[in-house]
Amino acid sequence: MATNTVAPPWMRERFLETASLVALGAFVGSVQVSIAASNILLAITLVCWGAVVAMHHERVVVPRMFWPLAGYGAITVISALASADVAASLADCKQLVLFLIVPVVYRFARGHRASTIMTVIITVGAVSAIVGVVQYGVLHYDHLGRRPQGSLTHYMTYSGLLMLVIGAATARLLYRESDRAWPALVMPALVAALALTFTRSAWVGASAAVGVLLMLRDRRLLAALPIVVAIGIALAPAAVTERAFSMFDLNDPSNRDRVAMLRSGAAMIADRPWTGVGPDMVKVYYEQYRDPMAVNALNVHLHNVPLQIAAERGLPALVLWLGFVGVLTVDLLRLLRRGPHASLAAAGLAAVVAMLAAGLFEYNFGDSEFLMLFLVLVTLPYAAAAGDLPAARER
Image (tube, rainbow, N blue to C red; front, side):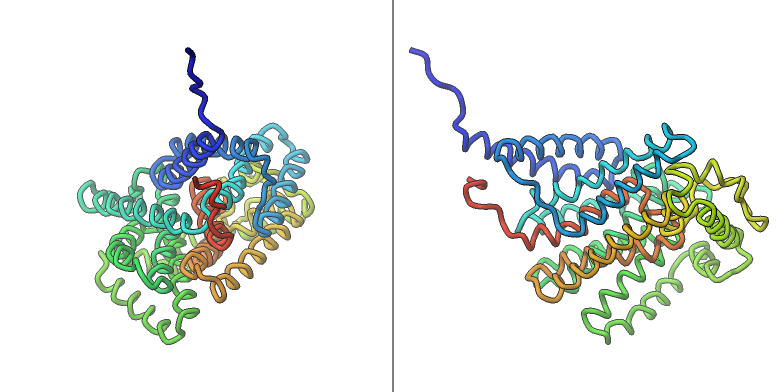
């Protein structure tokens, strides 16, 4: 007599829910390890998300900060269609798929799961930091021509991710009543690894993020920041100290080139204020708009997030992006002050501050790995505040 081997609906739902959560955790963990692995795991997570939504006939729900971000994506596509090289600009728009991280995290990292995902981020960041310290101390990644980069392909990406993890670890130290031992233990490695990357923009971003969190927690704590920075400079290798002081040297070639890029970007915006030169087209137009005081013959981007967005995609795109940042900041401050998940809200706020501060000197919002981790960090507070999934979904 034949037996029915088809799993009941609740079992299939539970399996798919679990698989989705595992895929999300693996994706979040892989962002700091490998761009190839993170892309594959993100694709798997998106497929799982689509299957869950279809199985439950769910309405896709997103936090309100997603809407200006989606509008920014729509304006980006319009800019690409107005580009001199439509094919190249549309190809660059593939990064917009990363915006789907917001609804995915919001759906699967609900309630207590959000804190677990944050622990994964801090833990992987600690391992990545140790790799960077070993690269500096053992493998001689100890000068501007060869800097620690972890398992990633570029030191700028590596330093940007460390910057975000430092903000997350600081948030847990300041705003979590428990589970402080682990972030306290790994913080020295995170800070040391970031310092050894020689990446000034990430130093500025991390300092700004930590400073804001200290000020919001207790203004008296802010007095400790310059003392810690001074001690760090005193103990740092001479090359790191010299790099730190170069931030204030107006004759430094990279500083002069960034000023020249500001002028070049302003000229692009003046000529094409509505749609910009097109996604991925700044490098094509740079020679035409290159400032006479520029140091480098070519720059693929303008090393400044607002400037790059306005020059590449137009002023309407910049307005929508600023709207996204504004709504996000207001929401995170509200969750920080009123919600039960203050450490997650503080981590999200630290990510915003770090991105904005470092983004004045580097186009970090256009870096896929950075954008992935950034979107995860700023969505986790919303997901935690939304509460755990209904019991029927957790069976």
